[in-house]
Image (cartoon, rainbow, N blue to C red; front, top):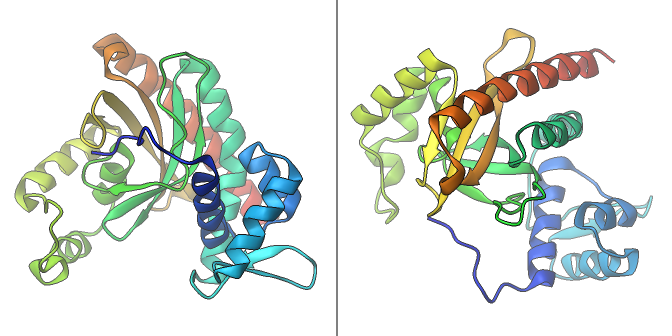
Length: 256
């Protein structure tokens, strides 16, 4: 489980969020970075300069910043992920307005999910921004949805003994996981009840563009004290609207 440390340092958190954005989405200007973090341009410039100094970023001829030698991801993947995030963010904001809880966009990276978009709700007791964070896929609601869409041979490979080796994190029971994923496929949504963070429950639904396999998932995260069967019905219905809207706009954007 992950809980934000009480001693968290905002500047470190901001730098890590920028590094993740550069890796997953491609280049950013100083203005882009400032808007993403909600800070002044001068602060964003200092953060990017430090990333350049440590080779996490490079400054291009057009003065935009791109992933440096420490970070590597294929250009096509950057472009697709950046487009997916750009298309999805307005819909995440609308989802937050509907359900009054925080919302996230995640993609599968090996046996983990990475949060590439996050919108906090306005309630005093709320789940915070998760952008840039990673969680074991089999524990997260979005991760379960993305795993459920994998061919069985790929799922077996993801959780093979050879791949996990001496890793100390808890490897799931593959038979139990497959049973759970079958339920996820049948229902069309997944629930994470305090699997990744104490006191947090999340509900997710997959994003499939042009009828293809799931390439992302949208989740709603809330304090467990506000979760109930009635809320589950409400959230699943809202997620269905959001993912349908994202799929439509993503398909249109890919044709432009």
